[in-house]
Length: 415
Image (cartoon, rainbow, N blue to C red; front, top):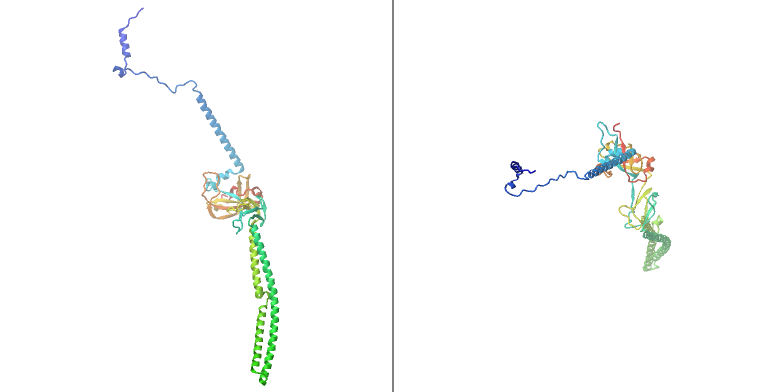
């Protein structure tokens, strides 16, 4: 059965098939149709990346919960030790006084500080005049207790100073021998001068008698004038001999035996030698480094063969009595009073230790004790408060010189 094409239907179909693109109407080739691809269209296996995203989010949430739990545990531990409330209100780390609630007054002053031996840490340096001497021997060790005056170290100039001391001692012995010789010589000279004076006096007396006879004979005319003049000259010479002998004897005669000139010179020479000996002994003493006071050796800065530097030879202090040097912010120092009770906490010991404000400094200076907070002020103006540690708590902290601590000073505010 055949079908005949319908011209009318063909015309309608041709009308629907006529392209509407301008290029077709101009007789040009029509462009190819392009397929549109939808990127968000689902593809096989597209559910797996969403699963990994969910797993990563769950892992981050679990890590955050672990960190929060650790922080809560650390906070609970610090609160149990009584440190966390202090650090929250610590004016030393924040650089200012702790905030107070509305309508309330603070009942304590907080500050950072350090533990020190009572009397501070003493840096033992070489004695004055030691020069460039080096340490020959160390006579103590760290942690050893020493008494005042006990030798701590020996310097390498000791042998030279020992030789100088021996020379000074020999000089003293020589001057002592010279003094003894002078005393014997003066005594002998005194006796000799006295004998010479006696001889001169006898000769003078004889010359006077001869002169008297010569005068009588001259008056009678029995002697010449020349003979009389000779007798007169002999008498006058004898008198001059007596005066000379008396002057010589006076040289060796004094109210005090050691006041004689030669003996006095010998005595002064002996005094000079003894002074030189004392100087040599003092120099020898400087070859040893003594302890300035009793205490415990905390740290040694040099070893044998080294020359002591600016840090000295060693540090020592009396750790049987401890104190705390606390820096209090200048705006809160007015609330601190001598005798106020103090509680001190530190990381090296459990709980707190007790103390009492012993004295308050007079100088406002820059803060030197700072906390671990990066935002803490380091240029705050503070005044040092010195706290005496309770003797019952000293045994717990005597090994912690320069340990940083936090102090809570009770005040009368808010009572």
